Length: 114
Length: 111
Image (cartoon, rainbow over all chains, first blue to last red; front, top):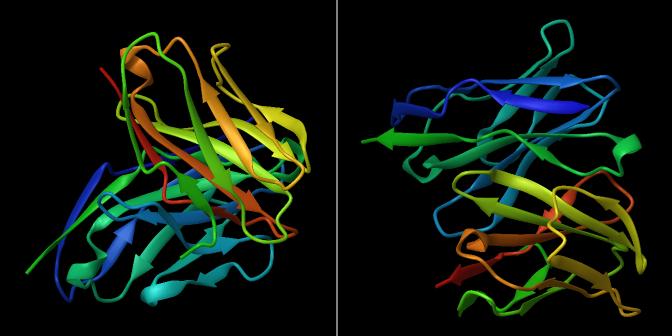
């Protein structure tokens, strides 16, 4: 079985300050991990993915995430928040032996204050 | 633009009715996945097709069914609709990598 826990349902930051969105995963097999972003009334866009290569993964729009097996974590960070980053972020896990179906966390709503 | 298209964008219907949602995957992708996003359940995997064959099932109700056609587009059929079926329905396509690319979704409202 596989599961994802996003530790914060809502994170609020000021523009220009760092962003940290936390995610822990559970998987009995080597997982692939993803972060997707959903802007209001929009679809899901892939931010970045980890698939057993480098543990520090760089994505679009300045986001990055680090895979830490010992902590079963895959936290998403960005050095400096922009107003356009305001959206809902989903941490997602999948495995080859489950046909790559995606298991989503409950999401973290990021608010960016001017 | 992910290259995945979904129609219609919005659908309003009444309880007890049947609707069909359509998805066209990215060119060359053989896999299509369907997901439901609702306020109470979040994002849930429903069903997967690969090159016309059902490959995996998730939390899909018996009232719901899907198929994938020879041209690789897929349809999700929802019947005997209930108020609780109101949700955003996404399809995603996948090629040879692990990444799934999502369509813009169909927002279903059951009145």
